[in-house]
Amino acid sequence: MSESTRRAPRSMAEEVLSGLQKPQKTLSSKFFYDKRGSKLFEKITRLPEYYPTRTERKILRDHIDEIARTIGPSSVIIEPGSGSSKKTRLLLDHVPDVVAYIPVDISQEYLGKVVQRLRKAYPSLIIKPVCADYTRSFQLPEIDQPFDYYVIFYPGSTIGNFHPDEAREFLRMLSQFMVPGGGLLIGVDLKKDKAILEAAYNDRKGITAAFNKNMLKRLNRELNADFVVDQFAHRAFYNEEKGRIEMHLVSRTEQDVHIQGETFHFSEGETIHTENSYKYSLDDFKALVSDCFSVNKVWTDKDDLFSLQYLVKKENID
Ligand code: TRP
Image (cartoon, rainbow, N blue to C red; front, side):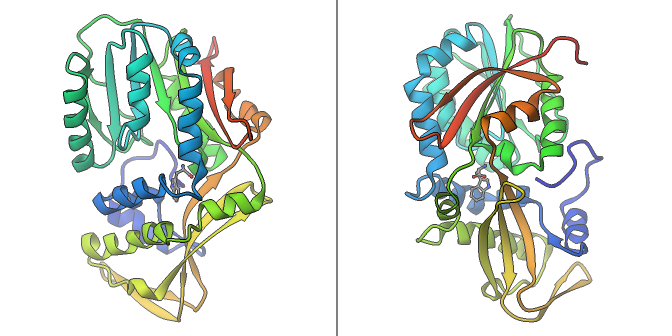
């Protein structure tokens, strides 16, 4: 998520063209998530090398009673980037008297299906889906029932996909939905051994590679681009200095790609940067959020791979 969080909306074509015109070619990671991309992402979360999802789920399970108590009753749960809403079910099953659930997702098709399933499983819960690019300011729907406060659920270490400056901006935007008493339950992947990190983004089955390359297929389909997908390779590595995993698509040869009347030249080995995944220490993260939030609780797994944190909005911020 390299886009600034509150710029005027631009079309996908505009964003793609301007990203590819940069000296380091870039494509925004939000374009990963078309229907196939969302499915491939689901597969990534089940890979043996990809520890974040199952570790976060275990933390959530192991501490669900305390988490539920921390959230408290009569809340409305908002989930930006809800995807399959799987982890949310644990919350919905344990947090007392949730008044409503607001999943926010960019993929209309996926959101519709997930909500259909949730309505069956939770017939008395008010569910108000919002289809939006949640990195831009979005509107919350009316909830015509009394509730105490909003709790924002932001699992999956998606915060790590923002540049730290943009993460700060984004957290400020989220804090504006909240009143004192409300909280932000957020998953944060932790710094650790480089080999573990790199394996997680270079799985042996090549699902992450397929996910990365799917972006090019999507641009071919939706913007009439002519990427030869096999002429690009997946590359992911840990940039220690910046504390982040970087994902790139590497041009295997010198080649030209055409999109909407523009020509983009690639030299052999030139890359398109598609994603960052920043890793934080607990102290790093506390400092990152400190403009708007204090860290109220932190739950981790026994190997300190991942953390789930409950942040509360500080007093006296706008
Ligand atoms: N936020 C998670 C992470 O950075 C999930 C994720 C987002 C991801 N984009 C990804 C995982 C691309 C693999 C590849 O790990």
